[in-house]
Image 1: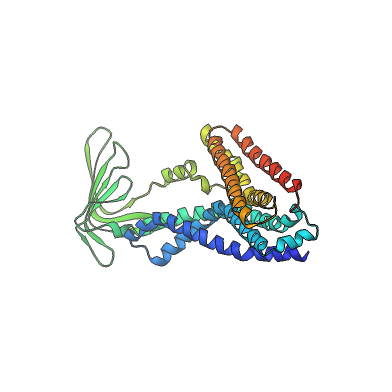
Image 2: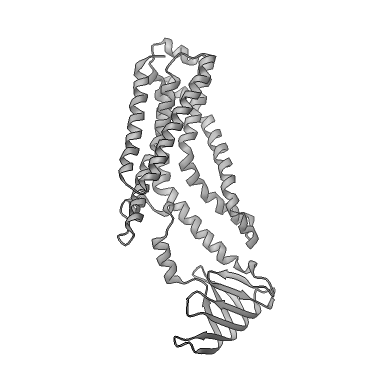
Length: 358
């Protein structure tokens, strides 16, 4: 059993290095979407803690490819040093030589299932919550003196002066959130505050003008008035029915809310199956790669051939999976073909293992 421990220990360093490098590269491309937050005055520490929440979703997608590259690199290295030939001379079959990598891939697969079932929706929900908080908390940074600024959907604001303590003077607020019930508010001063993580304007000494249902102009003078920037009722309904698919846990995906549309339910159920299927590729890619790589004795001429054939096989299987996944969001019958894709690939790989020893 010493050779199994040795191969597993040989797999760890390249796996960690590739995981860090590949994830960091993709992570950098993803955080470019959040650079606009600096315009709102976000602190660098808050920005970093926010973008770290993207990592679980990236790892979930990248882990099968990271495992594949680590396995190919390690076994190619062992072949170059003739260590696999030594093990072959003791009578080990292709399957026995592949067992350490397959065990390693199974461990990664279990970790991927943890990401799929728990960490992915947890981090995505936290990311969305933090984004909402940052947008609300830093909204004052986009308000400039003597300039109209859109501070929320359907709400625009003009101020004459912005004081150092956060108070604003000479405020004109346009509330167009309800068609047919638009209003204009004038206030001598006001302050932006947060209540239950929701932004509100606290206006002082002002006038509210709006048209009633009969089209008559109404005026309301006030000493103090609170104006919510977020409609909590509509926001709850929007959150309930328009959640991003990554926010759902697996149990919610398989048993969607009965009030959702039929097409939305099909999409959620299809995603639930994908959360089960995709982690399997951590094992399948390693199994397929080793079946091709260990098919013939190693030499420098065949090394490139094995690599190209392995890459082509993985590309074909991956392309079929994502094509079927996309179609399954419209028709659940394609989900069964996704499972069939895995089963056929596994059978072909197993045949290659049993066909010839190294």
